[in-house]
Image (cartoon, rainbow, N blue to C red; front, side, top):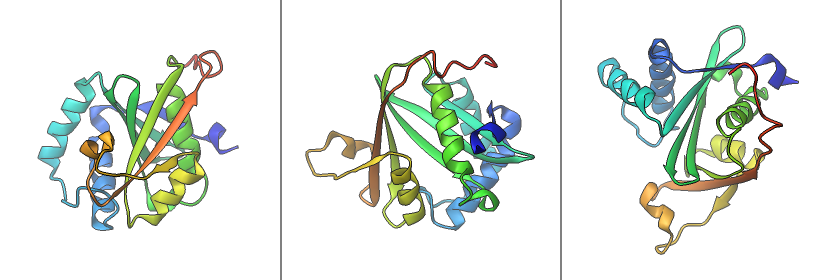
Length: 174
């Protein structure tokens, strides 16, 4: 239902201000790991680097307007991290889940196997519930856990594993 109404597009540099505003709004609400407001200048440098990178991809979700972004980054081999941010107006209406799933389908359409992680602040219950409702499992960290190097002590780690059929998710609009 919601999947059919959402359009996703590859992020361009013109989306920089939208992403910066959404990021800073989430920082103010203490939802993101890095709790520092990002200046436009430093954000634009980061955007240029991300857009050039072959390890990261950002998708913009659109309905009648832009409503969020999903960023997927290759950590190593078939292991990736994902983050999502959606404007307050569209939260709790099913668009975030549909947008995340469309982004995953588009990004992973050529991969048969992958592992996807999300690093969520422990006190961010909305994100914790979101990832759990989207078939991510919480991993308990310990000192021997290799994933500890990718996250901070105040994070929960959620993992998602899926085998996609490449044909099923092939998008002819790419």
